[in-house]
Length: 204
Image 1 (cartoon, rainbow, N blue to C red):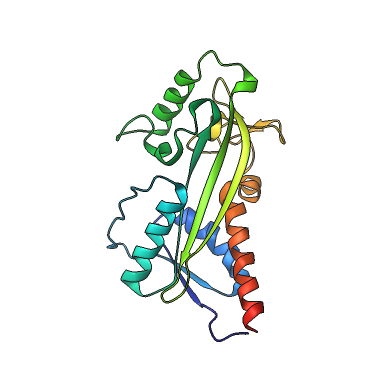
Image 2: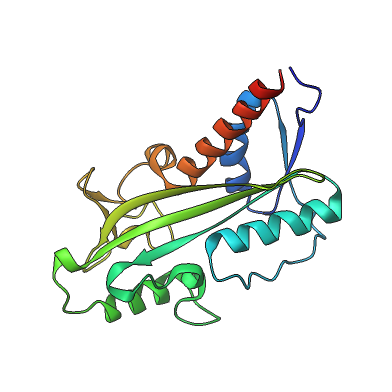
């Protein structure tokens, strides 16, 4: 293997669930995955795209800690709303938004729309910033539709309203293991790992 193989990867998140999920993907590369320190500064996510926010978070943390850093940004895009809420998914209903208030606002804005007009997708952008090297970016999407009422209790965010035609269930009705296998973040992570494997092979 190349001597340039990274053995430590910093994650621009304090979410332990996300740390475990991401660590499982990088285990096959033998990388040690750690969250940013508790006193790490907050990065202002002012980008207009998921990729811009992910790149900004990754590059700022990589520069601060002199360590390869991975960051993600994800959200919901609804066709009938011209791609909204998009990068504002977490605060769709305001700065003090909750999952319930965001879902309520989404249902209100789509009120009266027929099922074929309720197309939507979850999208994730993942950026890996490495000091002295090019920042890598990968993407993952899951296509679905927005339901007229919440279904399921396993997920969070917009999961109860996001219907998966491939499963006949909402994202909140499938198991966590199944969600992690098909999710937008899982797809983006798999693509990132494959990109890194290709780099290793090219350097061998």
